[in-house]
Length: 388
Ligand SMILES: Nc1nc2c(ncn2[C@@H]2O[C@H](COP(=O)(O)OP(=O)(O)OP(=O)(O)O)[C@@H](O)[C@H]2O)c(=O)[nH]1
Image (tube, rainbow, N blue to C red):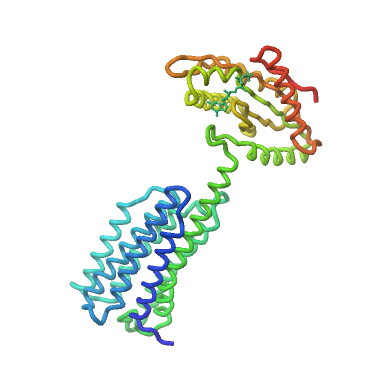
């Protein structure tokens, strides 16, 4: 089947508008950056569609106008896509770089259309700009294929690498012909492949954007479900999952895990005296204090209002007691500043050892709870350890 360029452009424009609507209305939650990035990409698709519709109306509009404005729309759409991708990925936006490339690209294309019309040179020039644009997108996604990064990033990255390879191939094969082609509609396998790529590229990139957005939402939800929003440390679910991993490791290495239950003393009096907001600030400072005492493999989480749980892998009773005492003394010595006043806060700590042969951490957690109760009964600001 033979399709002419105008029909293809009309199809591409329609597809771009449909994709833009899907991106705009299909996503409404999640991080502001990801959402704005998706909306900017939708805007880029609309601009791209304008270029396509112009190309489709070639019969009614002067070819020069089509060339100048068609290329212009396309270049603006690419610049917006560069920024949109960086927004979604939360990289620096590079507005200036992308718009400069867009302006330089358009001036070159205009020169090779009006002042010195030359199709192969215009293709070469356009390809150089496209390669730069794709390289910027690759740079944004780079590091994307490291072990912490996502599948969607890798998919997009390879799509951009393939686009560059196709551009290089298009130019090399065109310049190697005895008579270079004079139009994109000239019959040749590289032209057909290139037109196909241009046709599916908006779809591929939009699917890539949606996958990225979806991954970001999933990551946010995963984090929200496991992190305490006030203090930023693990919540109960985060602690439960971490404890399972730690216990499995301890079992394999025949080690034990230290468990500390840390509770602020008379915290209610802080709230009563200074209000809940200042109480929150004290909790943040308390967590920072606890964290600063921990080793790299240790973990802290919030189990309730002013109660925190610490897991310290591969420790003996004496190490655990020493750690608990260090935390207690550090907090006792900290002068918490509340509403311009300095306030002394203390903590009581219950400690217990979880052995690798225990089915879960519940037993050790219960023992630490009993030890904490003993510490409170002993007058607070002290450490008690449970018999294992
Ligand atoms: N500011 C703030 N206060 C909280 C939060 N969660 C719980 N609390 C407060 O922590 C206080 C805990 O009070 P209690 O359980 O009586 O314990 P306490 O006053 O620390 O006394 P002891 O534990 O017996 O030493 C209550 O006033 C809660 O309102 C929170 O997220 N922010």
